[in-house]
Image (cartoon, rainbow, N blue to C red; front, side, top):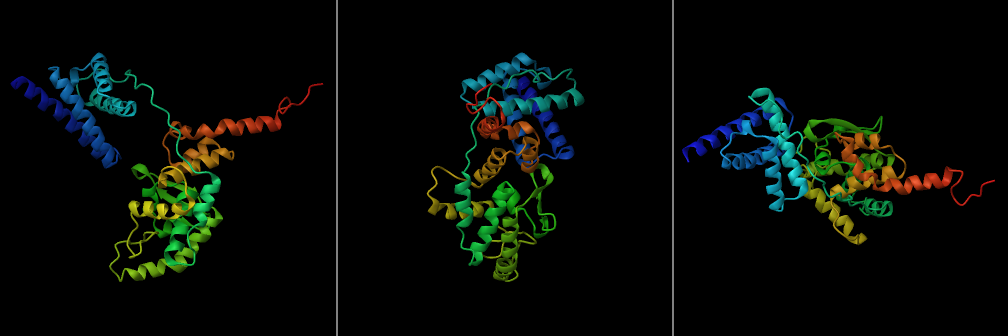
Length: 315
């Protein structure tokens, strides 16, 4: 029992050292670090129960651990994330501890279920964007907010994090701070820019005035009815309000507009790399989930341009 407790302390010390290195040297979000810590601590308990130190683990034991997780009914996506955590952890140990090679490197993550992203049709998006009453203070704000959310394909946290000076009207772009603090520029269409300009001229000063000097919004672009910074939950409520009269089937979230943005671009012929850049995806493989729209588009191109398509007769 005493030996097992000593092993547990040793294993958790290795994890603590790794997590501290993540905080100190890598730009990982708090959420990512918490997930890594939980994944590794769970694995450490499994290894300790085998009377082993983390530095002595071999590939076979990790595969055994993966089978155990699967038998527990864990989703393939969750198992894949845990394996990814182990790979990063053991990469660290090969540099900073007495571990010759990464035992997690050849462990298969298994097939993830490929779920197509939920998206709205172009007609549904147009109806949504035209729904706010642009003669009212909050309606003008909502019209600008929804145009930017869809028009730039933003995550809701990116939208609520925008400042006034992030919009460049000269080049028609918005500067976005994405995951891990990475910045990117995304184009905005003329309608979005016009509605933003109207919001800033008409609604923004009135919303600032409503705060009576107590606002914590700073230079935030989108404000709530009291002049404070708009929250992600508020964005969801605004979306729900303007979706209600449209009677759209199924659940729709702010992220659905991001999915719609990518789907519509690819359907109209945008290349995958450009869409990746606009979405702020680190890897093009993340963007590839939206290629569900491409077969129909490619078929249309084939039918239009190929000499043997469309029932043409040969000579």
